[in-house]
Figure (cartoon, rainbow, N blue to C red):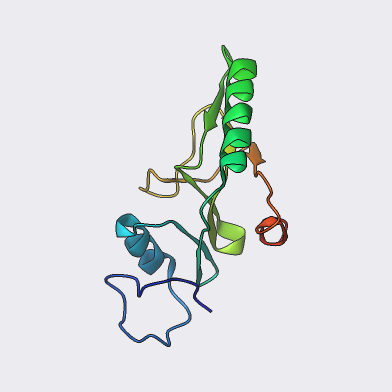
Amino acid sequence: MVIAQTNPPNLASDATKTSFTPDEYRAMEETAEERHEYCNGEIIAMPGGSEVHSAIACNLLIHLGFLLRDTDFRLYNSDLRVWIPEYNCGTYTDLMVVNGEPEFHGSRTDEILNPLLIVEVLSPSTEAYDRGV
């Protein structure tokens, strides 16, 4: 099942297509106006965040940034995807921490493979999805 408001660009125009390759997903995501996650062939539109969600994520970013200063830990916000090869899944986390240098997925510079810590701010509308696979 695909959850998107428009047909992804540069993909088959068949509106009944329900499974996409990771490369098709990445091509779509590079030009999409909204962000999507990918899970084993399925493309899932990400809902917009609330003011409270944003404030919590910012406060955590500031606090963790303070705690991790002068260490080898790197803190990243939701601009980078975590790629989970075992689940064929790419997801945007609210925050992630990497110990040392990030390991990128192949030649990509937008997908990290080695987060040590993933932080997800839960909301009533996304909690079940966030706690899922």
